[in-house]
Amino acid sequence: MKNSKFKIVLTVDQKDLLQLNQDNVQNIDFIEIRLDLFTSSFVDNRLENILRALGKPVIFTSRKTADSSLKINLKISTDIIYRILEKFNSKENFLDIELNSKNIFENFENNHFSIIYSYHDFKKTISKKKMQSFIENKLKSPAFKIFKFAV
Image (cartoon, one colour):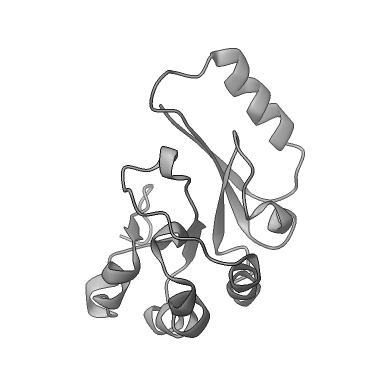
């Protein structure tokens, strides 16, 4: 499966992550960490060790409550988030940066991370012109990037 044209992303919250081990992630390509669904203490004290033990590339995501199907939106201090990001700052890992709102990851946009630029609006569809504008503005950055529009 490693040579396939598609990749499997497992999106997890704190409870889900605690149930993972190397056996049940062997066919997973990326683990997406939804930081808005984790406590500060967990991120600061346990997240790095668990992710290192699983040995998979990571996508770090933090969604606003309005952009989530889940109602939990925990607040983690910027310092704690920056500490964990520094430990995983490589091009094999991704940051999912919101195009249409301020995002905690913007200070890391030009680091080693690969980037997923996301746009979420579950009330209306984005216009083609606006979508093209978002893409053109971000194509200038050197990082490998993916654009995701969820409408």
